[in-house]
Amino acid sequence: MIRKLIVSISLLCFAGILHAQEEPLLKKWSYNTAYLMPERKWESGILQPFRYGINRKLEVYTHVPMLPFIPEAGVKVAWGNKNTFVLASEHSLSVPTPFLNIVSRKGIGGLISPEYDFAFILSVYNGLLVTKPIAPKVLFSAKAGLAFAIRAEKPDPQSTIDLPVFYPRMAHYYEGTSIRFGTAVKGSLGEKWFYEEGVQAFIITRPENNFFFENTGTLMWAAGKSFRIRGGYILAYGKYPYVTPKWQLWPTLDFVFGSR
Amino acid sequence: MNNHLYRKIAFFPILTVLFMANNSCEPLATSFREVEDAIIYTKEQKILPPQPDSTLKVMTWNIRFGIGRQPWFGDACGDNTVFRKDEVIPGLEKIVARINQVRPDILFLQECDVKSNRTAYIDELQYILDHTYFNYAAYVSEWKSEFIPSDGLARMDMGLVILSPWPLTDAKRINLAPRGDQAGIVNYFYLHSCIVTANVKIPGFKEIPLLNIHASAFATDDTKKKHFEEFKAEMDKLDAEGKYFVSGGDLNELPPGSDSTDYCYEDMCPGESFHQPGDDPMHKDGSNYTPETEWLRPIYDAYVCAFPLPEYQQNQPAYFTHTTRPDHSWDRTLDYLFTNHRWRKGSAITHQDFLTESDHAPVSAEFVLVKE
Image: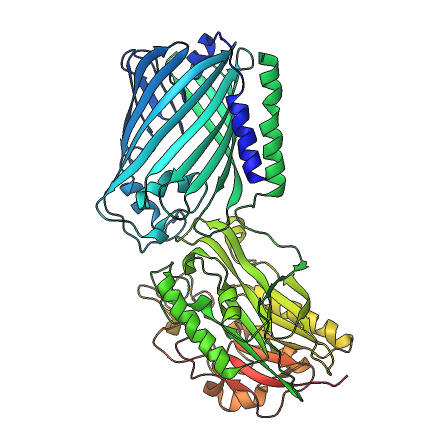
């Protein structure tokens, strides 16, 4: 049943190939596609990273609210068009050590037991993105990437945050390489409303707790020329350390603002 | 495929999500109904149950989730929240060895972890069932949360158990009053005290209702008093039906007439101060029993304790079952067995020599069986 469900959601996100008039959509929501931020334009959200277009070939990004806790820097590089496919690559470095040490604490906010201290971890991600307009005002994107960690010391396997969304993104800090791939369809439902439906899988190269799947759905309202509100869900499936694979549903909410 | 169709099929994932939300997803913390079914564990290869001739040995033991006397942040001034598998398994081995040594027919356990983060996700109940002669267990959670975002506790499932070599029937979880002295959000993630009940039928004898309780340990208001009233009400119900029951557990309360009733100094951690002008709180949570000394009196008056009150009052240290200090011997009595029938004279034992297995000593006694 679980496999059927995963396949069904995946097929939905692969469905159809048609041409498009994607310009308004891209102006509002190019995040998670192979398109870059336009030159000298920026946007940021609480959860969505800050993105800034250096030029037509290069975009830089980082998660601003998390910067003191997880120093991070990334670039998105445009590789041009191939037929109707738009190609780009993403490369980022982050250091989650301060965050892990902050949440390893006594009292409220202690997501990790206080007896654990984390040594230096450098997380490296490299990925490829491809986007294709498949219908008027509809974009299809696919991505694949690898995340691995360079560690001063291997963290204790019991010091993980065993929560959906967190666990798969942090798994490679502890053991193995994280292979990530996914697809998404986004489109507009009028002048001010947009949607995105996507799937993503995480395979961690290790013998246990190594497969995670997420289905995300988001609606975005362009409340103003430079302000958007996004809300939706993440439906997450995974093999966590407590053995029984399970589904979890999480709500999502973000406020995105930036250049006009 | 056109745009209209895309919008239509966008509803498919939404329906899927609603289906999943309704059927497969758990809230962060579990809330309990007043009464619900217990979870029954069974051993795959059953062992032939014994045939008692006149008595049934019953034991109650708070096993402190198998970590022995190691300092834990929640109850022994420790810093550790999480224990490794190679720390928990030796603790469980010791517990199992003691169970097999005493060989009770019926065993009440409190603080048994099932796949909790702090005990390396070990199913402790399954371990105990697999390594003893019991065939059946009734389990109820008293603290169940997918993720507690405090002190690194994370996933928690701790509960109460009744173990038996004979089948257990009508096993239930009875919810007890929530703590009245906690903020709502804390209470949401905190443990919810309860009773596990089940019936056991031994061939040739009347069916015996069993009740195992773990009352609140740290409530500073009258929550514990409510728990005792609810516990007694369950016993009263069975008594009124003419049934002979065995009840017991960790009541987290001293017997009436105890000489020492304030353990703030004994339980004090480094850096804490109590009983001094300006101290807030004046007493350590769960360590000052002075206002509660008569709260167990109604149960003592109505039913037969394995250790009658006069015996306890004559030599109190001989019946102590608990201490919070890892390196000390027992300093108070918190664990009990009651019945509305009879205990075999001289059969009650406080196993004070089991010093390293838990911060509680088990108590056992032989219940006199009633023929059909």
